[in-house]
Image 1 (cartoon, helix red, strand yellow):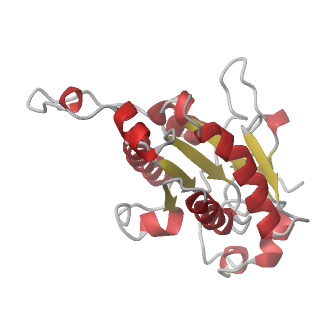
Image 2 (image 1 turned 90 degrees about the vertical axis):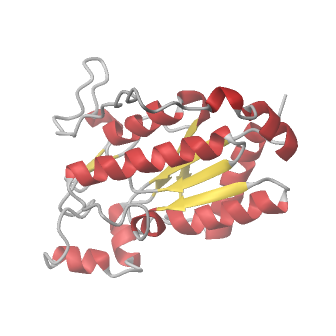
Length: 229
């Protein structure tokens, strides 16, 4: 296994250390005195979910670039739509071309990128939507940051588990080749680490599977979680 890919055995939860990985800490800012949220006067989440006939939540898809996250996310959205479920995709490239286009790929940039995404996903989920988040989100700490913001009860972690050599062979965007040549800095799996989730809610292995089979497998596991009591 490549040195930049960390398995669950590399992670020590007992003392909350993550294989000596340095991560920018997440701190929730206090609300300024002149800001007055009106959440309590808005329609309740239950009202929105009753209207949509589903439970809201966040499907957080993590995995290496080229693992198939975006393709599977698009397939999942279509499958849920066909079942009458309202879903929204937040994809890495789309988000970085808009709301997060002022962020770089430094540790601080990646942390802020995930913080903003998680806050947006939380708002959608609170309004009854199924939010499909497709982001490399390479470290355990950065994904736990997202979980803390969104809320554990709404956070479904999906590990799109594809070996580095398979992702590099696919190299749809040509990024691995550029990273090997040193043209792309801090590229996950090559010059920056990826920490595999030790216990994801769902694991989708794509190396030997067709995309449609991966989509069906994920859909079958997500649909029961959306049913209202």
